[in-house]
Image (cartoon, rainbow, N blue to C red; front, side, top):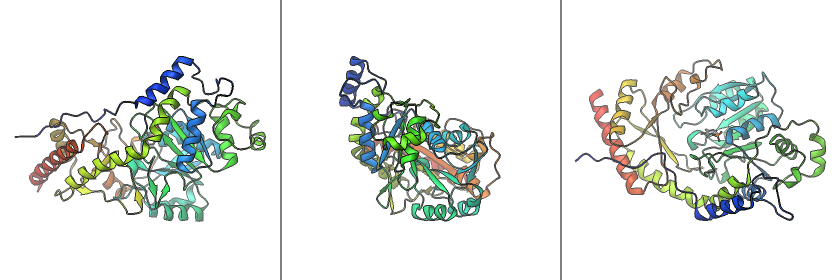
Length: 398
Ligand SMILES: *Cc1c(COP(=O)(O)O)cnc(C)c1O
């Protein structure tokens, strides 16, 4: 009998009951704006900022409207100017080059390795082209962060980390987002916490934080934020920093606080599912599992594998066959941008040189979400289906 999977790859878990209760309270008192506070009240957004700073070990955390907004704010807060070049990953999601382009800076793409991380040799080769790296931990894969920081320190490059897929991850125990000057996170529905839209900005730097708070739309009410530098620091920057509103509100913050408290447990649940799929796929002829380095603590909210050097037609065949059996795979390497396509050459507002080794990897990346609504049994079934269909197409090819 042909096994079919019936679950939905886009169905996340419901918002936890305590999040719903907290959201109802905000709706009932009506003070949704983060700076609309009753006397003596801290507000959900400020409390969330304190808790997120504590969670990441950062001196400061700022809650904002989206991950993309956090990244653009990071670039503005360190003074990136229009026309300035910013290094970033060739394999990432559209909001990353988009954040760079939003301030009229110019993305310069750095290649991707078979580990799906930034190519450090290519980074070294391009290190003299820019003073800033927007490092995207795409699909949760962390590069050798010690080496990366060494390269960037030597070249005088400021690192901003895009941690949209690494909230809860770490390199040698250091939380993702803490090696660079600034870490940016997203709480969009498909990330590790779900407020529909939302994001965070973390840093230890006083002046960068003061600028980010004013940029985010604090008016002159920055004293009501959760964790802020001293008044003198704001005095230095407040007259010269524009207000580019992108605040989080108390309703979203209320939903997020219980999710942050449960994040560690959720990450463990993702990894249980990830390992079932990974084990099921390992050893499939023609399929390359992306092995994770020992130094990396990852969060397996999605899984990638490579069909290296396969023809486009054969990859399309695998996707169609899996889809017929209910398994929704994403081909990030397709030439025509569709859905969440993540190839540097799909962003044609940027001129880029071809990177043949990266192109080979990008062409072969297949991606699958692992929502927590799947059981481990579901995951085993999914991996059996992929294994069978990849095997069938691979045999037909050779
Ligand atoms: C989702 C995502 C972002 C930013 O997300 P927003 O949708 O702007 O919150 C940034 N980088 C990557 C890799 C992402 O997947």
